[in-house]
Image (cartoon, rainbow, N blue to C red; front, side, top):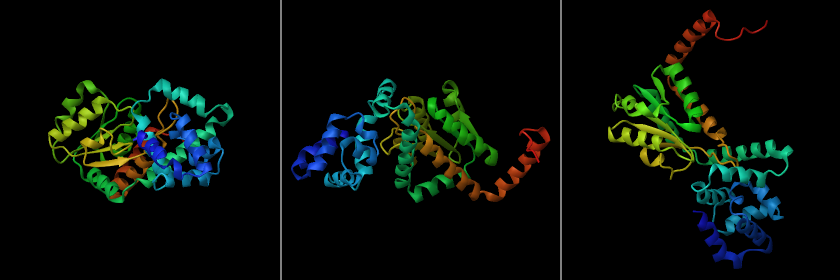
Length: 286
């Protein structure tokens, strides 16, 4: 929790160096900004070297800066609103010309965090369940809808068994036809939608297997599924960052394609012929 970082600072303040105390002071003075800074940015804001920031995190008992940052972010994740995110963006990005570069840097950090939390066995199990499922239904509402559409488009292209449920009014009816040989995929990031959690709860109550893509193991989606893929989506802005979740979906789709390679190759070959006959794509110039 966020409070845990502050408790550790209080308990170990006497052990911190003068430079490390500068980092502690910045974190305590800027509790809404600090969780979103990279180690380099934290060093710049605190007026110390980047190595000092890393040593500070270790001095507090964390394995490194990433773990300490995650602890800070967990504390702010649930209470931050869209309006507050916009205010954070003003605080972190004071110069308009630097916004793009700083957001890209934050996304790189999200990718690194996602890679550090990726478990090979969990990923492989998700691939296996998708590859062997009878019918697949994807649940992704509001901003997560974009991720759900992307995943559904490519799974349907090669597996021909996937639908995106984008209408919560008919959600339960469309889930009720599923059985133990099928699969529900839930996608959700803060702020989580109630309907996505309800869909996963409904699937579980009927014995339908499910997997989810979300941000942390404490996410309400994670509590309703046996297989959970985690991707960092933190960005001090009014928009969610889906760079890392989308990259993880790319990996998932690639792995599924390899798992059903013969079927996927045959299907894609058929589609190429159809696309060419119907003029789906703009012709390339010779």
